[in-house]
Length: 341
Picture 1 (cartoon, rainbow, N blue to C red):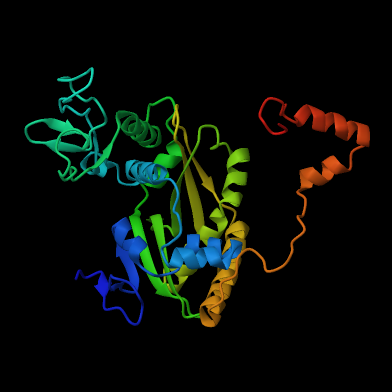
Picture 2: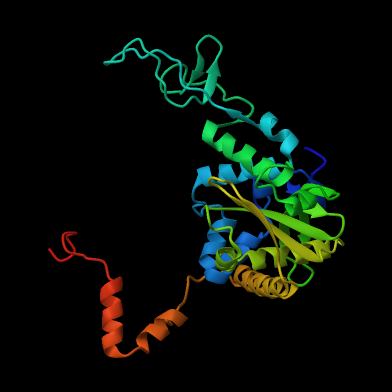
């Protein structure tokens, strides 16, 4: 047992609990294994308690593992750039000879995942199948180029796309990958937060990755709202306060995953974070009630009439002829797709 762990106290799970308080550079696996409530669980609770329950039980599909890996790669490139090449390695092509087929005797050429001492990189299908992968995470050359480009655009002056404010924030005195484990004073629920970087001036910095063009303010503000980033930051502020470390301002550092790999920091308005904290705490109270009653409903127990969005209402208020013309122009041609066969 490491110094980060304490005996579990009635909580289910294979691991002992993390001690309450702050933990520096805790592994992501250990952080995710902790049973505390995270901001992502609170956002799911707001959508449907059943989803939060599935996340708490670790039965919820977490989605694209490659996107998650690339996110961790970019986090390392920006927050701990000196560790980038120690943690990640570019995999070579499989050098195992094919035993049959038209290319018999030639190297396989598929992406390698482990290194055989006699063969070199092997994919596992050809070559040894039970070798341990390298201690670094294996990525392809395009992923590593992306990480280097994002790192350099943020941290290397003189590059055409260098962002001086990003460099200043990343090099402020502080601590990267800071985990907080706490007990919420109102509900008694165990909570967990993970600040990408805590700055000694009382700010937090969170790295987010988006597709090319989505880092522009007008697009990112919609993306941030839809993803509930204000709820996440509000939960971070609450957890840090419980642990006697105030966070006054919250910065989102956006990194685009495609060329030219732009980086852009945004400072969240305090009133947005306050609203996010209120939403997070309301969801926490609802989660505590579900845990007490054992009832975790889905989206709604009622028959729900859909509420139209603003642009849909505006469309319906148009003159009939104008609306028909707009709908005709916007509707795809469905002939030939088997929809009416």
